[in-house]
Amino acid sequence: MSANTAHTVPPFPADVPSHLLSIIDYRKLKDGDGLELDKLWMAATRHGFWYLVNHGSVTEAADMFQLTSETMALPLEEKLMYEQGDNGKSFGYKAKGAYVTDSAGNVDNVEFFNVAIDDALSFPHVTHKRYPPVVNGRMEPTVRPFVIKTSEICKTLLEAFEGRLGLPDSSLCRLHFANETSSGEARCTYSVVRPPLDSHSQNRVSLLAHTDFGSLTVLHNHRVGGLQVLLPGSDEWKYIQPLPGHLICNIGDALSIFSGGILQSSLHRVVSPPGEQLTCERISVAMFLRPSRSVILRALVESSDTIALAVNKHRRQGGTMDFDTGSTMSEWHARRLKNHRINNVKRQGPNTWLAGKGTEHSKLACTA
Ligand SMILES: O=C(O)CCC(=O)C(=O)O
Ligand SMILES: [Fe+2]
Image 1 (cartoon, protein in one colour):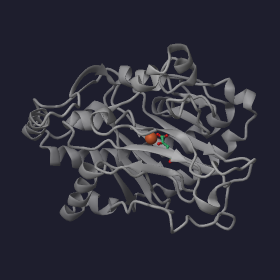
Image 2 (cartoon, helix red, strand yellow):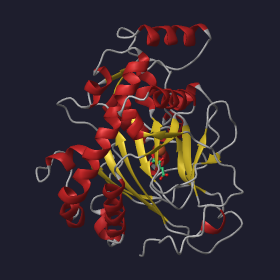
Image 3 (tube, rainbow, N blue to C red):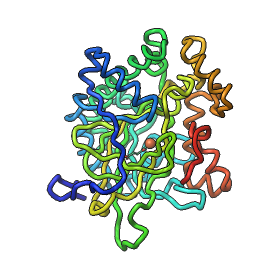
Image 4 (tube, rainbow, N blue to C red):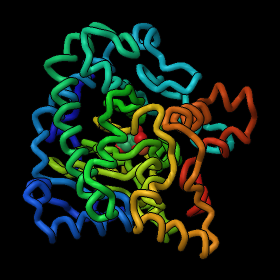
């Protein structure tokens, strides 16, 4: 397997429907620039997606791309020794074809390798799971620096949201960076569309429509497209153009629930790369920040009048979002993940697909 280089990858096509996401400057956020905070707030509350530039994690991400190529090149039998399984745990390998993509039972075309944030930080001590030697060899030089750098970015974003939501300082950060384990993880993602190609190859769903389970997702996808988003109020799936040096950030279910729905957790999916990129290898690297395992997913109404007002307004207007789920983060994650797995869907029937949904229930009819 050879990773695509800038020379071999055709450009992302200009004639496909794409979102012009806001571009937020991380350096300005760190400096407390009010206008940049306004831009972030607008993006996070309207769309739940934005680009982040000047984030200072280009080198760390480049090493993770290298790790992705090395890990995905392992023999399938070796990767399968680390398969995540059907019990709602996501650490380790996900083979392509393990997740459903629709209610008809079609399956995905994406491989993941997930490394627990806790394992990256505690290495060589194993907190959750063992990994192949190629990952272990890069745990200290590559995965740990990536996780530390990306966690700093996430902390800055959470602090900005605390301020705008009227929450006491550290209240969101404490839910994520306490002395407890979490399901948070770094992810290496790989997919390629292989011949025979037919008229359905273009635009085929390769990762199901979903909202992210946790709080924040920070994604490096620089060249080969495929990520699409269905923004609130829209009924058209549109691409997010991959841009070198730009992080793609999005809000997940947990932050949406904590904030009484003020922060948007939007539906997204991955389809085969558009236009001439169709048969290019697609690699993306992400970190998923999730609250600690025992944190209950409910709106923080006691800590913020802004959130309490938002919940009341939502209820008065007949909204159906559940702001008191009664689920811990760990239960929410396990339920959603189990219901993505084709083996569970086969065992338990088509309703499993519906039971796998997150906060999108309340907003839009899921179209895929
Ligand atoms: O690879 C991508 O562009 C995004 C994948 C994704 O949405 C996810 O892994 O949750
Ligand atoms: Fe996602």
